[in-house]
Image (tube, rainbow, N blue to C red; front, side, top):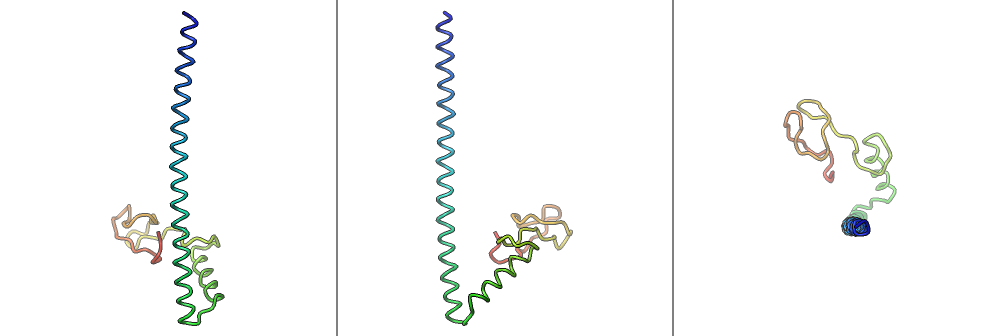
Length: 121
């Protein structure tokens, strides 16, 4: 009897471990898919940026130094050099509260929010 209880507990424990391992493997697989998709998106955006830069350079005689200067200027608009665009929220024009960058309306007064930058996510 004691032998049967021990083996039953051992069997159930191994089933739980197998279930956890399956869930872990599935979540790791999903993360890997997301990373692959994000890498593809970054590659596509880099290609598009390069094409736009070459068109602009060829048609306007803009220099790489001028482009770099503008990138640095935009980077500093939020007060820090972090190679990110606008990490601070902007104040609502209606109520003055700081807005979430992810929302199209102010959470406090409902005012429609215009994005600070054309390419802001």
